[in-house]
Amino acid sequence: QQQVKQSPQSLIVQKGGISIINCAYENTAFDYFPWYQQFPGKGPALLIAIRPDVSEKKEGRFTISFNKSAKQFSLHIMDSQPGDSATYFCAASPGGGADGLTFGKGTHLIIQP
Amino acid sequence: DAGITQSPRHKVTETGTPVTLRCHQTENHRYMYWYRQDPGHGLRLIHYSYGVKDTDKGEVSDGYSVSRSKTEDFLLTLESATSSQTSVYFCAISELNSYEQYFGPGTRLTVT
Image (cartoon, rainbow over all chains, first blue to last red; front, side, top):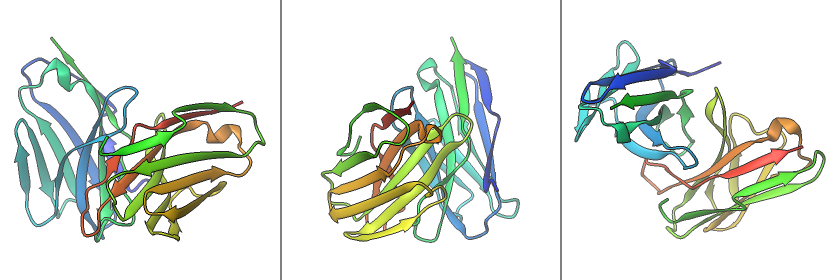
């Protein structure tokens, strides 16, 4: 049973464009939703995260949009740059986060110059 | 990588042999986790620890055991490695009362 569904699997965006990656979850006990960025041969790096008490969080060019009623959240990368080319994972965790993260399957993002 | 080291970084072993992977942290964080990453599956939780000698199972714990005798070290053992355990293994840490998890550089394990 896949508790966090991520789409698309791969995405190609032109430099300067907006990259959008979507995730949907099933477990209503989830209350923490991070996004990780991973470059080849490296460990995942925490990019941005949101709790369900807000509908949007922005950090620089990265924005999370959260829709609690639809059980969906998304990552928007504004003014996408070639250096943003990486694999992105959404994840979710229930109360407190100590029990570990449930990850989506990842999106391979390519930003074309 | 947030003061996290994993050893070895690469290992090739034969089916049926025991393997131990080590995660070492210098952050004094309470929580430690082991995940495996496979193409098309994202990362999946194997085991986690919420303190010295306190561990629990994750989503894909069959065939794995863990131990934590010191705050800074979390060991993952494959008692008898199988080809299905060929994967990249990541350790992560998290502080008490924090949701944020930080990942190590990973160990690529190949079981032949």
